Image (cartoon, rainbow, N blue to C red; front, side, top):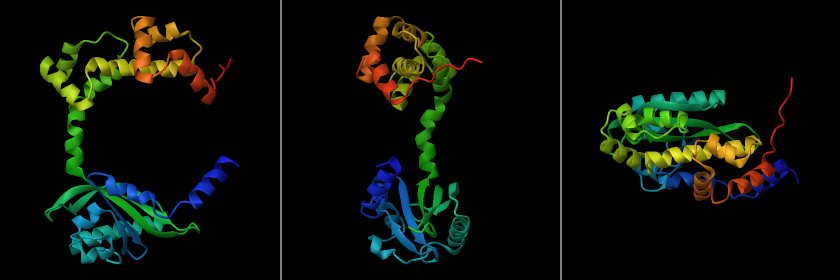
Length: 256
């Protein structure tokens, strides 16, 4: 049985609609689905509650105009029609949507067409996420984005925490506390992970000796590399190389 045949067999024996239950457990994400006439056919608990209902059965068959203000309902319907008429998704729509208090707030909406077993469009589904909440969640990362980018490019160099703190316009203590809270690790641990990732790539992509890989990835010596690699990857570099090359053969160099 080929991979495509196996996938088709597996998919056909799935109970319908199982994947949508993933959205029941995604924090801060509202999920909905509509038919071609714009009637709600499904919604996760967060969406149902936000619309003022208690069970999914209560929203089935309801149109936006029965839930939202005419202006918002018209906007939602216009986007729905575009998705259905083109068969293409609308992603990253920043629009107003009622928050928990019923007041309009900026949200990010993604809408995708749904197709039946004959390949014809039969409706659409979408997710709605709070733009304000997303921005607040991303703010700590944005404040350290310059530092993170610097470490990705210069992970082979000696770590200079005071310089990194200066880049982030923070004191050393404030920077170290902020970095750990944001990335759940110290700058030193972050840099080591960057080195391990580089070593993993080199082990598969090149034929260089393990010791050379260790030094090129920025480790001080083979002993330090061996200890850190096993700690992060759960196996030796040689074991990793053998296993990964069985999955991804090394491409021979082309000589022109």
